[in-house]
Length: 386
Ligand code: FAD
Picture 1 (cartoon, rainbow, N blue to C red):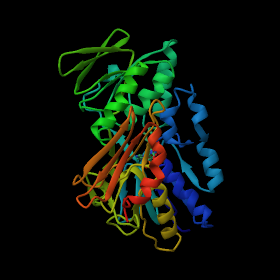
Picture 2: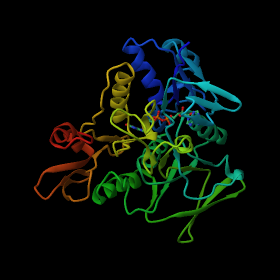
Picture 3: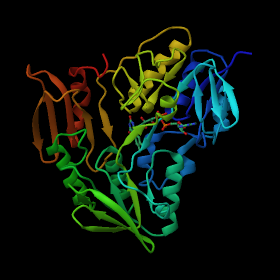
């Protein structure tokens, strides 16, 4: 019997690829393996759930069993792959060896906390990067039985989205990070400060240019110690200080891996011909976008390739929509820093255009009512991966 196409990971990348193969009419055997529950959920909705008081079970669109049934695939949950043997084309799971014909790494990315979190703080300090994490944080909030004081560490997309969402859910939010403004990788400073002003006006406590050096527990509360000696008290801490591609399996298997993930070409193939990588773990021709739109394009290309039609992926000029309803934000960061920002503002409604030395648009950022210009501007900007 032919060994299955085996996919490690059941996030958007893993399930999305299996679904696309079936949509193409491909009926080869597929096995999906995941360390988590295998529930099919939309990760972007995690940072919109607290405002709507959404219980975790409502975020799970399908159970692993339903996924398996729908895809005619084997789904193994709560199963951690320990190693990949590329020569024997086998996965190592404990004592078990599982043969594969083609392998897809869809292992995502892992949060990187900037400080040590002792086990005694496990029920106080969280990061939310999957549905299991959401379950844990949701349970901690519920157990308080009242609105919580939540300190969020990190001023990027995930930190800002959770700050807006938790504030809208009635919680008291403090946001801390080392940068001078919010969304430092997505917005030029004046726009990041505009978002900060709107956050502060809504009641969110924002601390710029502060590093968290330690978190201590005092009774039922957590204390954040900042690098200027200041102490911030909270019930719960949410760490949102960035994600790192989960590459240990690939490194141990001898695949080519860089800082931005497992290196793949535009056919999503790694340095081994029958091993592919997709989603947050993959660096495609030098770019690891970590957003849904590029991921979906990669799914379509890899599914076509695995279905016998070798296809290269391309990314368009796809802006990121940040889910901060207090002040909507759209951003298409320029690919390089040889740009000048031209900024127009009407209150907190801002348009920032990143232009190169020839005056050509290389990226843009929009806030408030200006986000309606996103389609028009995206048409004029260069593709992310042309
Ligand atoms: P993941 O969903 O992380 O899946 C990884 C899978 O690999 C999991 O099933 C895990 O269990 C499994 N795994 C890992 N290691 C092993 C192992 N050794 N053995 C077995 N299984 C393993 N993008 C947007 O475009 N728009 C948004 O609005 C947006 N909002 C976001 C909000 C939040 C809070 C976050 C965290 C991200 C957001 N993103 C957004 C990014 C987007 O959701 C991700 O790019 C995408 O979901 C990544 O999917 P993935 O399948 O690559 O990884």
